Amino acid sequence: MADLNELSAQEIGRRLRIARENADIRQDDAAQVIGMSRPTLVSIEKGVRRVRIQEIQMLARHYGVSVNALLRREAVHTDLMPRFRKLRETEDAHTTEAILLFNDLIKADVEMENILGIQRRRNYPPARGINDGDVVALAETHAKELRHWLGLGPGPIADIFSVIELGLGIRLYQRRLSSNSKVAGLFTYDESIGACILLNANHPLPRRIQSAAHEIGHFYGTRQTPEVLEDDERFLSRDERYANAFGRAFLTPAESFSESFRQLKEITGKTTRRLIILLAQQYNISRQACGLRLEELGLVKRGTWAWFENNGGITDDHVREVLGEMTDRRDPSKSDADRPISHRLSLMAHAAWKRGLMSEGQLAELLKVGRVELRGIVDQIELEERETDELLKLPD
Image (tube, rainbow, N blue to C red; front, side):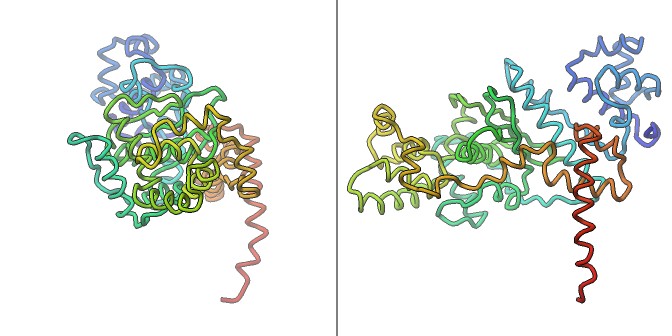
């Protein structure tokens, strides 16, 4: 068991408060569990009164966490649930599911990095703010500004996920949510853990690309406010209208997108299904996003996309007729999302186990998997490493 004396009373109190809030338990109820008054519990959570080991054991059991997870020195304690609760007037089960998963992924990621001494590189531009001016025009300007800052140039973005993780240093998670979940993405920022994005891996690649660009908008313009993006989002608030416009402008810059359209239309002479399919493929966006962006930029008449929808649409069969084998784009994030633990976390878990920094039980608890499943992952990586040990014998 972790040592109660390794942490300050203030840090233990903070961890207990976060655990209680994440479990959605009131202070009065928690105080009754350990037979004390609410003011005494408040004193514990503020670090004024040091908690006893018996009290922490009872509270941990009530909050659904282990004492080891509460007291382990490197343990990460985030409080995403209370942050998102303040954001939303109503809270449905699917949103709660996504936030809890997001919280667990961040905790595991950061704690494993702390244990292994990994320093995640951040490449954050200053948050811009969106208080002044027309929000759509501001989003267009900011998207162009960030692309220039990242050195992306004016054309299509080949891999927005690499831009997020490697270009900006944002923590990105793509995991499957419930099949009927409306959550498309989540964004949060905290100085201690950095910026984090979760995308619903059930969604097709073009949809996730658009969600990713939307969340980059929140990162760039309104970083301090957490955000939930849903499938049927109406984008009513200034923040959401900004992020929605930013996402479109970031993926399809007005100048290059317009020029790409003109080059194709010079050949076809009119806006056809094939033109939209080719343009959407070029910019890695959905056909709908492509059609609506053309309308927004005044390149086609308003209602063009609705006309296509009412006249047979632009279906997957149409795409296959035009693109053939190119229709099915590689989507490695989908296969990673099907794993119980991502490839990166699996590697870190093996490293922590091999160095004796964490036991199998601690790793299984942190990563939310069974010990047998964890053992299978660790054994597989261990076998692969043994097979490549011969590389060390090659001459320099």
